Image (tube, rainbow, N blue to C red):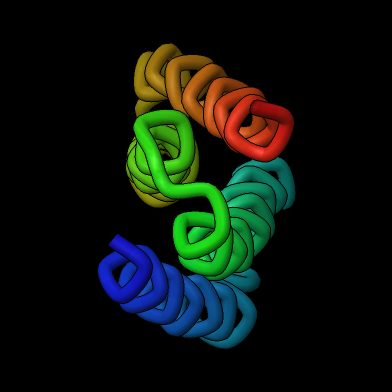
Length: 121
């Protein structure tokens, strides 16, 4: 699992940087300021959790088990649901996509709780 989470973290990191650059150079001035901010929040949390995946890759070698593995997959799901929904909302302007975002936020929170649990037990 350590190699999987490290690889996923690295891929998530490169996509966060690429999407952030795309926003800064390709979307600035094309999106309203509020939708541009939405995209930036998605990219920021995307990068935070790319780094969390790298940390989880290390944690899985130290505290192997279900909680650590769950943390990694919850971070992946959070990136897809939280950041993905914000990217889609910003680019399309379809506001109901924002209803998906809290599910990703819950995944992020649950991932951090699972990681803490793995370290504690």
